[in-house]
Picture 1 (cartoon, one colour):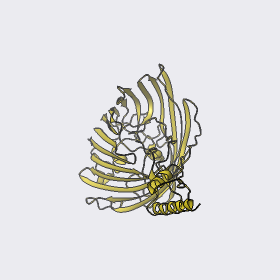
Picture 2 (cartoon, one colour; picture 1 turned 90 degrees about the horizontal axis):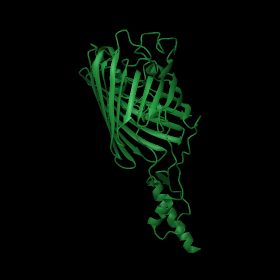
Picture 3 (cartoon, helix red, strand yellow; picture 1 turned 180 degrees about the vertical axis):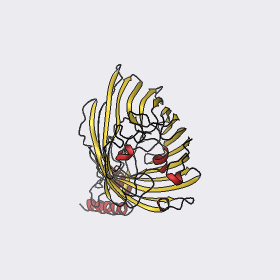
Picture 4 (spheres, helix red, strand yellow; picture 1 turned 60 degrees about the horizontal axis):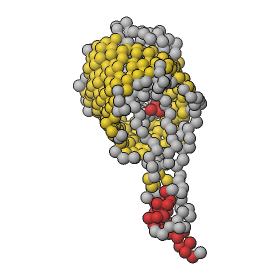
Length: 421
C-alpha cells in the first residue's frame, strides 16, 4: 500500500510538471494534411479517426501504478488518457456515390483588408457563407461513368463567387441576386465524365489556379491573400480534363470562356486555355503548377502562372510556398482603380499542428502590382471543439511603403466560426 502511494505521488509530480510545461506528448499523426490547389470538385470533409497527436496527462491519474521510472510513467500516460477528442464528423448525407451537405461560416473583422472584407462589411458580425452543394461522383474505375455537382452560396462572400466576368443580367451576376451586402452565388454547376484515369468536367466550376480558394473550410486562414483576391480567377465556364499519368503525376488541361464567367462570354471576349500538372515528389513533398493563357475577358489578354511547393517536414510541421506571375494588357493600375495589369505574388505558409484540436499557422505575402509592393503578415489558430466545428482567430498586418492608403497600412483582427454539415 505504501509503495502504491509513493508511485501515485511520483505520478502527481510528473503530471504537474507536464501541466506547467504544456502537458502534451506526441502519439501519432492525424490531421493537417495538404489541401490540393484549387480544391476543384472535391469533398470538403476531412476524415478523422486516427489516434490524437497529443494527450494531456491528468493530475491524479493512476496511470503510474505499475511504472518503474518517471520515463515509463510519461510513456504510459500517452496511451491512457487525453483532453482532445473532436469525435467523428456528422454528415447531412453520406450515401455511396452521392453527397450533399454544406457549411455555415460567420465572422468579424475590425477593418477592410484589401481582399474579401470590404469597407461596408468591416466591423460587423457577418454571415460570410451559407453554402450548400449536391454531387454525384463520377467513378470510372469500372468503365465510363458520369456525375454532376451543383453549389450555391449566400452571404457577404457571395459577390466574390458570382460570375462577375459576365455581362450584367446573365447567370448570377447583377440578376436580382444581391440584397445589400449579402449576395447569392451559383459558383459551380457541371457534369463530369470519367473512365479509368481520365476525367472531364463540363460547365461552371472553380479555377484550379492558386492555393487559396473561395470555399472557406478549405483555407487555414479566415482572411485571404491579396494575390488570390486581385490576381487569380475564381471560376470558369468551359471544359476541364484531368489524366493520371502515374501514381505520382497528374496532368490537367482545358478551355474556358475567360475569367469568372458563368455560361456567358463577356462582350469584350473570353477564350483561354487552362493547363497544369501535380507531381508527388515523395510521400511528403508535392509540386503543383497551374496556368492559363489567352483572352481573359474582363482582364484582357494575358497569361497567369502559379507554382506551389508543399512539404511536410514532420508529423507536426508543414510548409507551403506559392509563386504567381500575372501579365496582361488591360491598361489598368492597381493603385488607382484596384485592378492589376501585371503582378507577382510570393507567399509562404508555416503550419504547426499541436493536436487534433489546435493548429497554428503563419502566412507571409509579398504582392507586387504594377510596380508597387504590398506586404501582408498573418498569424492564426484553428481551434476545433468537434469534427464539425472550428474557430479561427487571427491577426494580420498590412503594409505598403509605396501606398499610403489606410487599407494597406494597419493591423487587422478577425475571428470566424465555421460549422460543417
